[in-house]
Length: 276
Length: 323
Image (cartoon, rainbow over all chains, first blue to last red; front, side, top):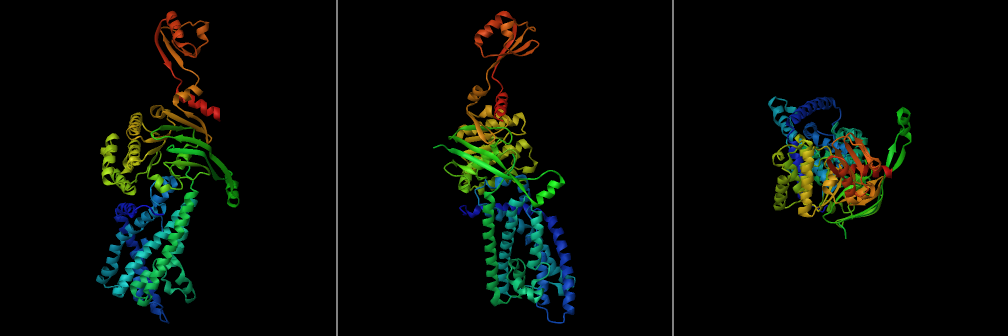
């Protein structure tokens, strides 16, 4: 399928990435909101932990990691859609996208990858500075994010974040493809974002859900987004389970890429570009 | 073997329809009605290398649909076409790297990038070798005088500037065929002229094949040796402009400016098409030299012109006959 060299896709991604790095003020405003929510979550969860009668399923340090990584990397989640892409569907310029000697799937995958990672990079620096340093300076030591549990966990975490990004983009591609049928993406985005936020652990860390839900939560795909990488960082996933968790993330990513490619191929066959 | 071969091309769209008003809106929630729209009903033509062909027809005739199928964007319902040896919708990626397309009403440049960055991105998307890219882009910048525009973001360009950049962008990778879909729409006379001259030049210099849709028949007269007329998804005529005139626009007209408002006698009066003071327009389906000799000997005359029927009239008649 991909007969074109990787360089074309890299060019698409890096151009989009550079364009998006311009939005620094938006990033600062965004991370301020994230930090506020992070503090709120820690207060609520901390209160629960204090009155817990049975030992909680995850240490409070792991919770702190889960919350801060979640807040810093929030924009990596597929919670919105590239406005350029939406505009393309509305205006019909999507026709031009089909004129490029690129696979439409990987072309948009590259764009979406840039759209997800550029804002995340901008937010990551002030976010981590707050969670690692500023909190310590102002004496809120119990909320300071600890460092990775071990060297091997740090390494696995790096790989796991990579899969998180790939999975997020692969899922986003399904939403993108849905625009071929729906014209307007807002309903689809809102609906899917709701599910994703709960199932990835962004709202409440997954280990804190009731025991009877755990088997379901363990096997559903959206764990690949927050739950797995964050628990690897904190060491909540032990060394001997690292490989299987990374494999799980990898498997889900490949599955969603496969679905996306199939969907987009079908979409292209029945495309209607009206007018002009 | 022709560069573009189109045989029996048919495309129908299924369009959801809704009755007007609140009742209609509610009804469509439960039961959707569809209507088949036949955009193309069996189009055939061949285009050879280096030809410049005008593709005209009234709004909704199926022009853009044809271009979109030839460009590999749409899949036809029936029929075949082969372009450069490829079936566009089956070998899309190979096919599109050998064609250039400009939709006058849409831009292919990146809205918030300077033109030069859009060009460089296209270079990498089409994997144009550096030396060829340098040469093509220098040439295009020169011919279309884009030098001062190169560092401006696309969103700041005027329509004319934008269209010129779009045309350059479509030619960077040296395609063998250029599809122009209403390239001069909304342009002022000078820019139109510049675009036409440019297209003519590249056609000559590179044997570039051009298929052009337009509502501006000036484009056709300036550029095309051949015109295909379609309406309701069918070919009405295919031939040179003169053939088109001969077939549908019946005759030439003679416009004579007299010194004073003339008193014409019977045989001359019968030929009058328009009479406006001292300016009179005559039919010219007779022996033109004799008619002129006759008139000049009898009246005092300021000026004589012989006109082809305006191509607009010809085409309007053609559209009307068909519908």
